[in-house]
Length: 453
Image 1 (cartoon, rainbow, N blue to C red):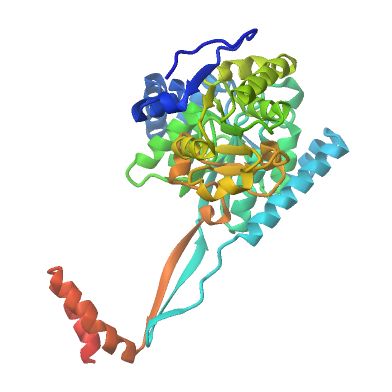
Image 2 (cartoon, rainbow, N blue to C red):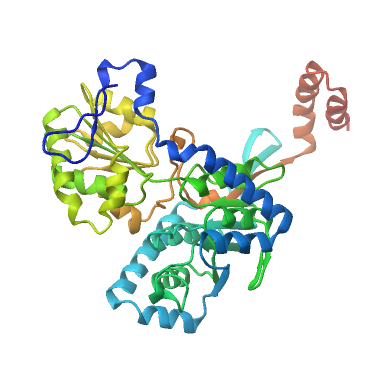
């Protein structure tokens, strides 16, 4: 991997990489995520918080919330009056956009909700099917530290509602904006919670929120029950807390690695550099730990897009955050489209934008991406807010083995089997023989009783 070298007239120290010149070990190193995601201080502090909440319960959640959030935990009921006031605080066009986005998310997840399979007869008289059921209690973490991510609330709570999860516990950090004091969060969060059919929002952030969802907590405003499964993206602290919670004996399941945002954009000579640059910045502005990667067969395209990034960056309200994120950005030169696909599959990006002439053809060879945006009109931002699929997607390479949030994420499947006497007579001898081959005589005899009946 080449050393970071600044482009001409650039204030961003872009790291340029010629992929074909790297060894396999160097290629993996070139795609490393920002170190803060796995820093020792994050791991140790999260472990301390989770253990403290295990021992002291709600009081520990409250203490850590005051220390880290600057406010104690608070439950915000989603009442008709609260929703009315929150809607009045927004422009009518804002509430309409929220309604459209919520409806699109609901439609997509209703249409992709798994249903019980038909009966499948593998042997005459032996029938089986899959039955799908919702989990009981889902903990939904909605980021909100530097931006009110009401879109993430929709992308989690609506699929959980479509799955018919009985208890949906949504948590989000309290807003530090004095204008939101009435609700404790941006009014759009209250409206989004209403659109998703939630009855309350809990204002708790960070690892202490994950600990509360893991162990349960009795707080001044009510009780948070222990959750069966935890969902939602977050910063390095939240991602680590979910990881540690899932590793506890009897701990909750988690949806996926969902940490700081990632975007890989593949461009060629036909791509619009301004569009590609805007997409890269849309992810860089999320968080200083976010990572963006630009891949191309064309050096000229890499230069054009990086120049466009430099031109667009200063006018962004969150330019400082985006600039910090760009410190982990990569410009990768590849020999051809096949090599570009190999880079994408090795990295496993949360978001992958294909802005090339052969974009449609590349999809068939891609094996690891949370969401793929095909062609110049498929802005990642559309997927973030209103296209329909959930934008809660695996990060840190998790796309190589996880998919994004779907309705099935909030459900479990059970196999259901029925067997007639004739079916048992035919299949039991087979099962008994295999059981004895494994040395499990009691298994074999349980089958024998069926075949001898």
